[in-house]
Length: 291
Image (cartoon, rainbow, N blue to C red):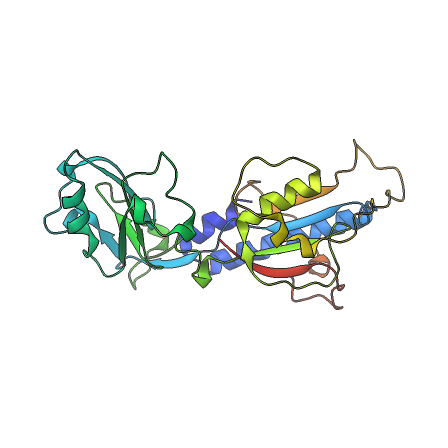
């Protein structure tokens, strides 16, 4: 579901508009779980709810303009990928690498500039042939601008300066954390686990679906403790309309379906709502994951 991401970018993560969108997602999840129950699929269908990143508030004054750095010129740059938030890639022209690196290295207290070989290994990013010789990233709350300055949306520019939301910051920042909830026959009940890196989710999905994974940086063993018995789930109580019953349903809020149901859904069926008349079942878990 892309809309929570769009509202976060346009108005900021703490805005009323984004909070209203989260309520809509809440109702959608409630509707989904209600339909799973009504269809008799609770013992046969595992449900995973997660997202791809968090969101950080960015104000207009926290913009790092590369073109204003002393002794820096884009004439020394063969290729640049900037103006897309807190990250940047640069390919200096032949013989200009050391000069560009030296003038940008200490250009701004909230800007981090690395040669490819020195980029922090924990990001698992710089060891690819397509990564450029110089990499830049900014501290949470700051964005990097190059030649093309992408303006703030007019609707997100209140009198106090201009607010929007961004992601792509250091995944150790709390605002970059996301959520992970899983429920169903594949998972243990009532389990709360420690935060883990989202890179492990791919291995988990492949395990649940019986798919041999492609090479990746994840580790299934990091998430195996959350898995329950490998006994096959019970078949649904009655005939199921449509085709075969899927063994796994994964919902990623922020990256897939464009529109959520707009009908007024009861908050009592929502696992996230605050208006539930009774405590939720001790089933599944919430955790924070690394971006």
